[in-house]
Length: 360
Image (cartoon, rainbow, N blue to C red):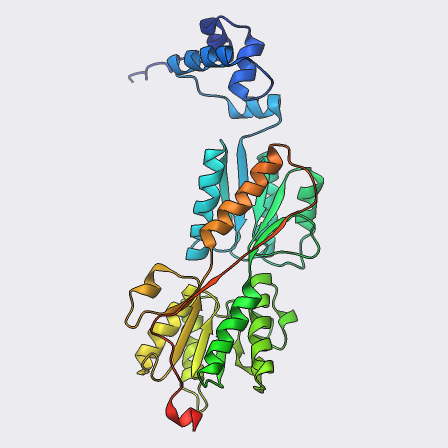
């Protein structure tokens, strides 16, 4: 049996130091990114490392510097375009600051989120960004703060955590879009969300464990109450967490005797299923049904008709939360920062007055 050729020996810090003509300790400071050296020495060591094709031993470096050069991120659903775009913002900032990103998907499950946090801490990540699955269950996130790692929350704040947080103005956005529909004459406006309750029935915003969605529903209900519309709670539908389940909910709504004349989708995945299902049933947008969705996903602008959206600054949410973590890692101290970014209403062609029979 032919033997494979021996692997070339790994280039060590000592090898780089020898080539650069400096001490091993000086080379380690340059290669590890800690301590103070002159620009001349840094350039000499860097050039020696490049010439030798030196690759750092991340475990050894983390033991020496206390830093792994990584930021951990836990999100609810990476298949959701919202989180995909937010991750792009996070990784762009992290990379430019010299950090790699370790991503774990929780599937909006608290147990999975807790396991993800344990994994990230075990991997000695320098900072952690989390979009909490349940804002009322954050004991594991408090533990992160006790390890002195920077922790920041993305899209979902928590009153129980005094940490850097970046969210959008969800309540005001939902209140505004609901008000627009009411001004057009709509009185039966449904709100669909993936969040669920044990018996799949919505009773109050307190039932909703995801803060961003809860704020949107609060805004929706406030607009309905201000306009004197009765039964707002009955038009909130929960559990639209998969295409099949969403389709079932939409069919029940739109085939019923008192169907809604407008639907607000809490995310673009739900919005897409509302769009497709309404077409299958034979309803025309906006003549028979008006549709608004949160998140300006790519598909919303190319359908016929194009869909009216609440544009969330998703990429900016990602870059902002990553910037806060990097600043903490670079020594920023002080009170927790709470950043609220503004959404934008983009009016397209999926919204119009309700059918004439509804406003007579």
